[in-house]
Image 1 (tube, one colour):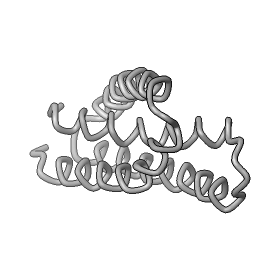
Image 2 (cartoon, helix red, strand yellow):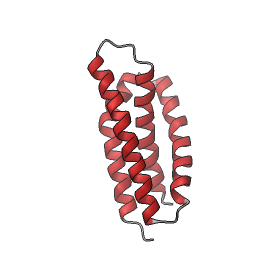
Image 3 (spheres, one colour):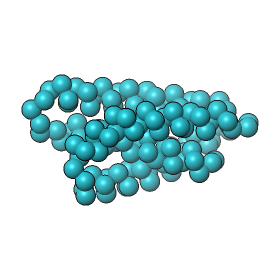
Amino acid sequence: MPLTLVIAWVLFFGFINTHQRHANTFKGESQSYLLALHASVLLGTLVGLGLLIYYFIQVAWYWPFALFFLGSLVGGILFGTLDAKINPLILSIVGFIAWPLAALWGFYVISNLQP
C-alpha cells in the first residue's frame, strides 16, 4: 500500500469526519450551512465507498480493509486533535474543498497501481 494513498485517505477521511462532528454539534443559525454539512457527509461517504471498491478491484481484496482501518484510525485521531485546537468552522470550510481534492488524489494513486 503506497504511503501517498494512506496520506490521501487520512486527509479525505479526516475532513469528512470533521464535517460529521461539526454537523452533530452545530450551534449556528444557518440551516443552509447545516444542510451543506450533511450533504457533504453523505456525498463523501459515497465517494469513500467508491474509492474503496475501486481499490478492491485494482489490488488484492484485503488492502481496502487495511486502508480503511489504518487511514481512518490515524485520520480520526489527527483531525479529532485538530478540532480541539482549531475552530471547527474553519476546518469545515476548508473541508469543503480539501476532501474532494484528497479523493481525487487517492483516485489518481489507485489508478496508477499495478495489480
